[in-house]
Length: 451
Image (cartoon, rainbow, N blue to C red):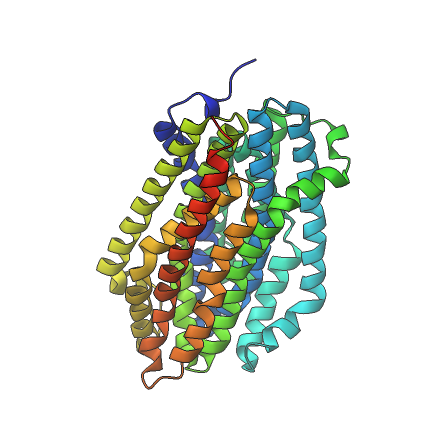
C-alpha cells in the first residue's frame, strides 16, 4: 500500500504544501462575508445594510463553529486512524461525519424559520436594520446545507492530506459568490434587483457550489477512504469519538460568535458607528486569521498522524514549523494593516465617523496579532493531541473571559470610542501566557508516550 505523505515527507516542506492550499481555502471563505459587505455598502442605504450584516454575522459564525468544530474532531481522528493503519475505522468516521452534517443543517433550518427575529431584536431596536438583517439571515440559515456540508467534506479531504481538492471546491464557490453578488444585489444582466437579499442568495449559491464539488471529489477521488453506503450508518461510539474532540472545538469556535454578539451589544452603547466599524474590521481581519487557521488545519493532521505513528521527532517538527509559519502570517498581516489601514477602509462607502473608528480599530487590535497567532497554534497542537479542553481554555480566555469584560469597562471611559479596542490585544497577551504554561504541561505527558 502507498505510504501517506504525512508520515514520510519532510515536515517543513509538507507543512507548506498542505498549508498553502488550506490557507487559500480559508481566505476564500473570508471572501463570502467581505464581498457581501463591500457590495451592500454601495447600496443607497449601504451603511444600514452593513450594520445589518454585522448583527447577522454571529449566527453565521455559529454555523461555522459547529461545522468547523465537528470537522476538527473528524480531522484529528481521521489522521490518527490512518497513521495507525486503521482504514476501516477511518472510513466509518468519514461516513458518520456526513450524517452529522445533515443533522446540523436541520438545526439551522429551524433557527432560520423560528429564531431570527428574536435574535436580532436582542441587539437593536432599529426597525430598518432589523428588516434588512432578517431578510439576509433567513436566507442564509434556511438554505445553509451547502455551507455546513461543504465544511464537513472539506475536513474529510484535509484529514487525508488532499488539501488541493478542498481548495478547488472553495475557489469555485468563492468565484461564484463574487460574480453573483453585484448581479443579484443591483439587478444586472436581467436579474431582478434584490438588494440585501441578493447578497444572501449569492452567498448560499456559492456555498452549494463548494458543497457539490467537494462531495464529488471526496466520493470519486479520495482513495485513502472507503466511501460505500455502509459507512453512512450512524454509530454511537464513532459519533462519541468525533465529539470528544469536536465538542470542545465547537464551543471554542462558538466563542467567536458569542464574542461578536457581546461586542455588538457593548459597542452599541457607544454608537451605531462603533458597531459598524467593528463589523467591517472583523470581516477584514478574517483574511489574516483565516490564513492562520488554514496553517492550523495543516498542523492538526500532520501532528495527529505522526502522534499515531509514535514518531517524536516528526511531532516536534510539526509543532515547531506550525508555530513559525503562523507567526509569519500574523506578522505580515500586522504590517499590512498598520501600513494601509486608511486605504483598506476607504474601499467601503462609510461615513467619516465610521471610517475613522474603523481605522482606529485596525491600528489598535493588530498590535496583538503575534500573540493571537501563538494562541491559534497552541489551540491546534492541543487538538492534535486530542486534548480539546485545553484548547477551549485558551480560546475562552482570549475571546470571552478577558476580552468582553474589559471591553465593557473601556466602553464606559471618557474616550470610549478610542479606548475600547485595547481590550482585544490585552486579551491575546494574557491568553498567550496561559497557553505556553499549558503546552509545557501537555508536552511532558505526550513526549513520554512517543519515541
